[in-house]
Image (cartoon, rainbow, N blue to C red; front, side, top):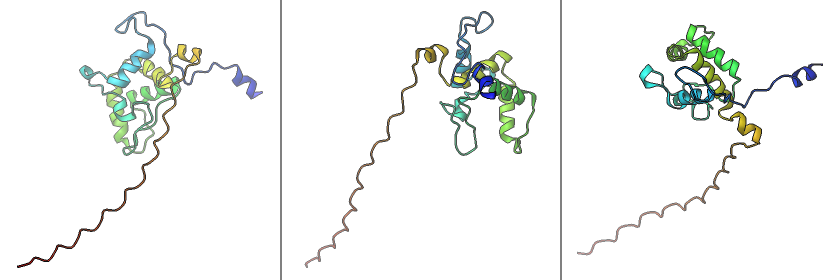
Length: 163
């Protein structure tokens, strides 16, 4: 039964890996924090722009040049796509945006690609937040639009001048 199979699978969407990194440049940071740092701020010293500059702060993408929605993508998928950009593997018809991502990902380490993948997967629910049942606050309801202003009165005719 396919339902029983999926019921036994480990879920992952919506959670970011908050395991501490034991060694290397990111020693002491949580795994998702590395991805968060790169996503939000990039690394100017290595020519890596902030991912959110194109994909938006929540990963929802940006209209116009078709920057895709990346928030909530499964970690494995997001990391694989970043690796494909880095190696030059593309199925895209228009290589322009692919080439932008290829240049960015060439500067990323394997660990950074995995960290970005986990950050995108949660964008950003940490494992301890999900376990505690805390969720981001709902967006406020849009404000009720104000009543339209009355049209401006037509200018009065100038009074005739007396001589």
